[in-house]
Image (cartoon, rainbow, N blue to C red; front, side, top):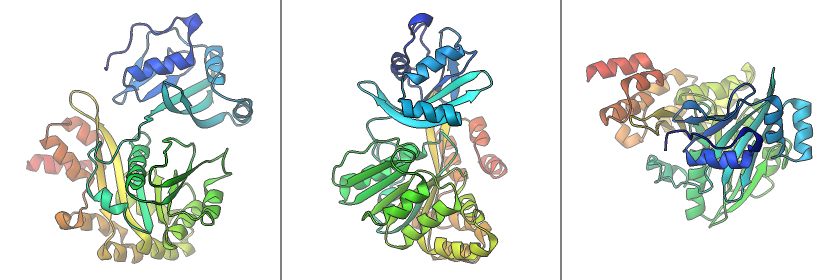
Length: 365
């Protein structure tokens, strides 16, 4: 359903749990509570106001504090920021961020599916099933906020869970998808409540006999360095970055380090990187969203370019012999969606990392 409801609750009886339940019924991905506005939900990338009373600071504070414990309240009141996830029985699972504006408390809630989708359900590239069979190395899923990175990673871990007997450690801030042990054994850690930091969790994870490690976000040199070490020492490591392209991801990792460390990092990456999947979500014609996935898979040529500091030439490698390499560029993905009449030309160009290249290819059609 894409229409917003005429009425969910009256001002005096608004209940955050009932509100979240109602929002889920309308296929929304996010709920926003901001002082001076009625609650707003996001459907297919567009915000839509609900027909409710305009919220005051006290309204939002009452709703927000009803979901958290005293310890979390103290953290929020001290830092003015709070990230956490939670599950409401018989309703759903959510990721929440509390923050303060000049007018008071504000909240953003992201809906998280309780049932973890399989790789096939979201029509992911069949090569993903081959990548996750690797015994060691680094697989990165990148893209902007809201591009479905967490869902893709959860699907990959779920596939391992269905097919392999492995110990999987996840380090997230916060934990989003909660995995049930099927064939694999999961140890899921939440930064802040289960561990002090990504880097600390990674340091000690190597003593916890893991086969697979998921790093929710590779934010700094210490975390990235630990991830590279884990990938080199016989572990399959998954990570995310907020980068928009596969070559751009490699540059971002290298640039995090000081100049005298970069040669070593390039050598580590060239030997341990398995793949980079750069993802974005684009509105579909008729409603909904569709993912584009630029895929870089490391082969001897790509490894050499990383090691020799010629990352700018990797894009050309991604365009060659794709039936054999299983690589793809975002531009080619967009052209394919346009030819299938799944997305509009306007949205394709607006979401393209290389709009000039895309426009030339569209004109060539």
